Length: 196
Image (cartoon, rainbow, N blue to C red; front, side, top):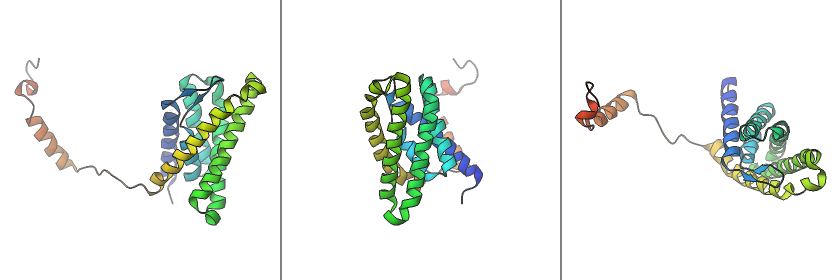
C-alpha cells in the first residue's frame, strides 16, 4: 500500500508528464484544436491511480497543456473530458480485469474512454462552432485516441513492472571520479588567480 505522500508524488509526476506529452507533439486539427500524445498518460492515470487521483491528474495535466499552449478556451472542457476519461479507464479495468485479464480490460476501457473524449469534444466544439463543422474533428480525435491507447498499453508495462535501471554511486565514488576529472583539466583552467 502506498502512503499518501507516494500517491501525491505519483499523481503529480503523471500530471506533469501528461502536460509535457500533450505539448511536445501538436498537430493542428481543423477547428483550432490539436492532436497530441497526452491521452496515453490520461489512460495510465486511470489504470494506475484511484479514481479521484486519476481524475485530478488527467484533468490538471491536460488543462495545463491547453493553458500553456494558448488554447485557453479549451482548458475547462479539457479538464472535465480528460478527467472523465481517466475514471472510465479506471472502472473498466477494475471491473473487468478478473474476468478478461489485464490487457483486454485495458483495451475495452481505453476504447470507451476515447469514445467519451471524441463525444466530449464534439459536444464542446458543437456549442462553440456549430455541430456541423465540429464533425470535422471527429477523425482527428479518433486518430489521437488510437495512438493514445496503443502507446498507453505499451507504457503501462513499464510503469507496473519497471525496474530501477540506474543506481547512484556512493559519495566516495563520486568524489574519486571528480578528483580524476579535475586532474585532467589544464593548469590554466584550474588556477584561481587571474583565471582568464
